[in-house]
Length: 212
Image (cartoon, rainbow, N blue to C red; front, side, top):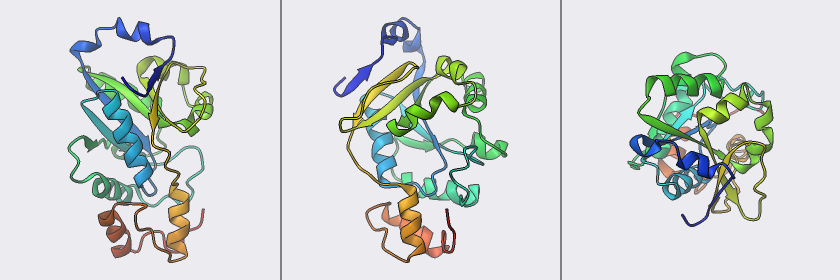
């Protein structure tokens, strides 16, 4: 597949009976708010890997403390639904929101694997998260439970202590933090998020007065 780079474990993955399972992507995050860069990353990685569908999975409560200003999960769910609307390749997975509390990826994915044994899961992340994987809860077990699929921008290195699929994606540098800053300063976020998402944010006055 063009633009896809694999680790040395690729041959091992190919020997598994994955052909009888649905190849499903999971794109997890706080999505505070979701933006065009994430949409392009999830679409590009999912399509290049030939996945049947990519599920966006907003967390209930991020555990790393980087989103102290995260708005309510119900609002972030609506933002994701609005952002992915009209794209049949995308869907939403609400396990973490329904479970509530702090969201640990290993616990969630173990639950999904047990509930949906018909699926083979590919966990999609941006390359900026790779160096932090060692701090994730039960990362060794998680790396055996799912296949990590990393969106690589530009000349970013393909280095990890865990099995990875590396996928070239367009180099779009947008962050949710930048969008929140613009909203606080009453600046335009046009073209950084889908138009209908921007309208939803404006209608419900989200992110006004919040600080990271």
